[in-house]
Amino acid sequence: MKLILASKSPRRIELLTQAGYKFEIIPAQKDEKTAYKTPHRMVKDLALKKAFEVAAKYPASTVVGADTLVYCKGRVIGKPKDKADALKILHLLNNSWQTVYTGVAIVNINKKKLFTGYAATKCKARKLSDTELKLISGKHMDKAGAYAMQDKDDMLIERVEGSLTNVIGMPMELFNKMIKEFGF
Image (tube, rainbow, N blue to C red):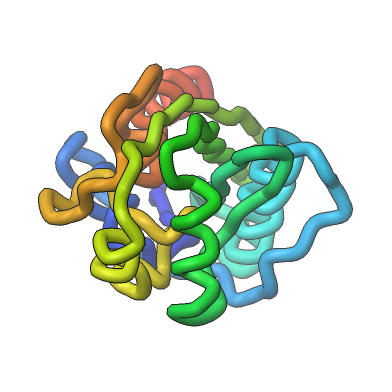
């Protein structure tokens, strides 16, 4: 049985590789849109859409989809649109608690199997000056929240309560449990 990751995220690829998984990378191509409004439902729905998109082309394979967003002060925060948006996001997160949500979906069409789940991790951003925020803005345009916990030069997050791998992009504790229950 072949495992496919429906993502081109370098962080997800690295986390799964470090955990010893062998997989192909076939990223989903569709827009990331959902009708859901709550963070945990949004990420599960988007992860499922990504997994199904790829699984439709590879029905005998087990396909993993994932989606991450940040929730802070009542706002859902995805990837920044541009450097100005990244700076605006970082100002919002500055000196605040936020929750990072990652949805995971595992699909195998031929086996008629589908698992979804999500992880939520609380993070506290330290208080940074405008100059410090400008230094890191635009640096992580491909990441929800416009920051990278794993980047040693990224000084935004001072405290994590929960899964660090979730903040990086794939909650490995959840994924390992799900893939085992899936029978892979």
